[in-house]
Length: 534
Image: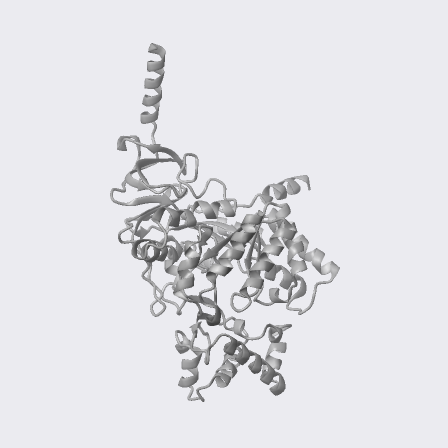
């Protein structure tokens, strides 16, 4: 008995004598599991959570007093587009101030062409958040086929599969598609299935901006599930929504499709941004066939009177199907040839130019704007969703939170506010104010669920030996400040944010530290073996 007491005393002494790099004391722990919060201290050492319990302040080199605040895992944004912008702004302030410590990029079918070079450049520069990446179907298809409006040849399909395999070996966490964008929109389902099979062999996930989020959204969801079934790969349906006025209120039906697939045994999950407006290119409202081939061919179609009439007719038919009489819902985020258009709707620009106020004239204006921009991307904000559907989708337990944003340049242009306030908006508006979901479940949607979905080992939970990606916030004040009219505003309520154990926000201020890591998919191990055998 004496030996037992001595052993327990020795264990206790060893525990308290341990020197931590940092201790977070007195916080309410929301650990990412969805379980109820509890009081505890966190000891952090060598970038990991070393201990959770009662820890004396004297056992640490530094102490954060989190009294009255929530301590949670850092948020994982599963749907971002940071290629280019993260290299320019590695501090990723708009994400960090919103509690995001890990980004998953390469979504909607668009990714870095060479992931190894992309990862190496970010490692060399240093980044504040962690980063994982998908390989994009549109990127791969464009490299092999440009914008050809046809099926791939056997040789071209094989070339695309080789590119996907290489990306998976380089560390991609999966394959993404953007089936409303060129050239991905020209792909038939079997082409995508075969590419998804390659990603599946390397433990990847299939993430899809589905083929239609409006009138034909149910068929598009079924296609994504079919691809998952045929390829034997988990599927993440990106920015799940109902984006057509005639079918507002049908989110219960679209969610039911996902849930039915899960009951069948399909590994299907979804993500969402908590806003009633989307953001993508102006070209997305032009018929896809008109965007095929080279930019010069697209311009030739715009300038040919007969073809222009056909394009206009299809645009107006689509407008009518959506119960709209004008393009007043389509707002310019950034237009390089004339930045005074930023923040104005197509209807407002049409009126500013003194033209006839009708949909046909506005459709012509869309083509004219694209022509004057030399076919470069024109970013838009589209007000196409209902608050009822947004809240209903958020209630679904398998919905993750995602911004669908890049690294913002503060004060530049009129971007969608989701780039600044996505997670804080959920915590402030939908947890505290509207009580749509409880705090613990909201945190789970932002942490452990994304980590599980994209197989990010040792992330997403506050647990010993897990990476110390941590956010500390006041649940009474946390919230988004960015609006459609004034989008450049950082979220509020976050006092401290840690990435891999390193504080990157202290007393609500970004400190420009860059401890972020590149998080590689399981296929990278196969790639390393292959390289070693060369």
